[in-house]
Length: 461
Image 1 (cartoon, rainbow, N blue to C red):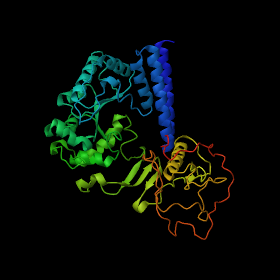
Image 2: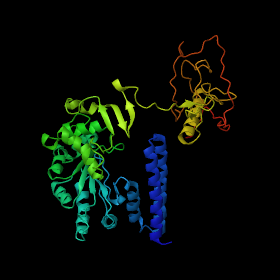
Image 3: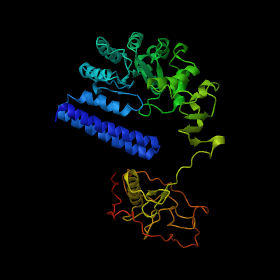
Image 4: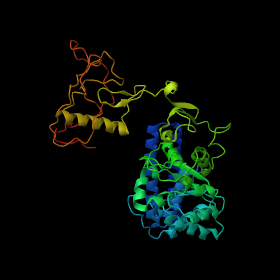
């Protein structure tokens, strides 16, 4: 099979995986989303490995762009945020700036492929040194008429971008997206590069003065919090979460501009400005009612704003304060008393994935903690199990008043979800009532018998 056919096959795998991920995300279940994400990542890695092996690495640049396109095609996000790994200058302001090797050849091929097909892209670039090298490649392709060509493209982060580079970005039809990484790494940046350099990292006002589209975000959750109000506080107040002022007034923005960067500008970056970004008939009605007025709350309290009502896709998904109780009920998760496995509201016992591993780890932890070779007293061994939560009249073996002392000299690797506490009259069966369990039919989902663990061994993952 030729390298082009292998690349095409790998692209189709990536596109199918991306489509599966999007369909699951639209159903809104976090557990399904997590499983779909893992499946998608596995499919993309397998596709990349097959392509690289079949083409001796020659088709890797094309595959990266194609798969990135598949992941963002539906929402118009295009490829990114790394078109080639060799061009990524990962940020860690406690360490020196990474010195990148030669990457321009592969980088040019990936960018050319995207631009010739009218596909957008976004690039991770922290330092101006990287941005200048990327722009040199774009300007080379501009001689062939590929820049500016109407494609949406942008730099992400750009903490140390220079004004000269901003002018070049504007000339090539680009945009920028900034995140509040300096909220958390501002002190480290000041220690390494000085307060003068930190005062314009990134130069937000200089970006806006050039008429560039500048979106705002968090870059969560690898390097910062996902909380948007922490990011908005950073844009308006110019302070870190440690209360260090790093930006002078001339590099801060007002609240209306900050909110626009976080809403309408983000929609423009993805080409969704006709359906997102503002509340207007014909636009998506996702909205939130806030605990405080963003425009009048004291500046230092912006980071503490919370939602008291969140509506997504026409559904009330969160309600608190005076709205508490009007959101959708969370489906109950019961537990099988025999195997401690969470079960659905319909009584069906879930025996797959993380639920099964969590149940096994929990039981193993209890056996180690109590020094028993069999099942822990906290998980009674009975002839059957129930797929519903035990009724108040049902009783089980009483829990010890204090945590059992382990004979294991090594701290167990798994943390028990239980909190050991003395039973009270409100949560303990009467001493005159014999310990019984509610008779039930045998549990069809009962796991096979497992060998006992020695109290001196830590359980396996």
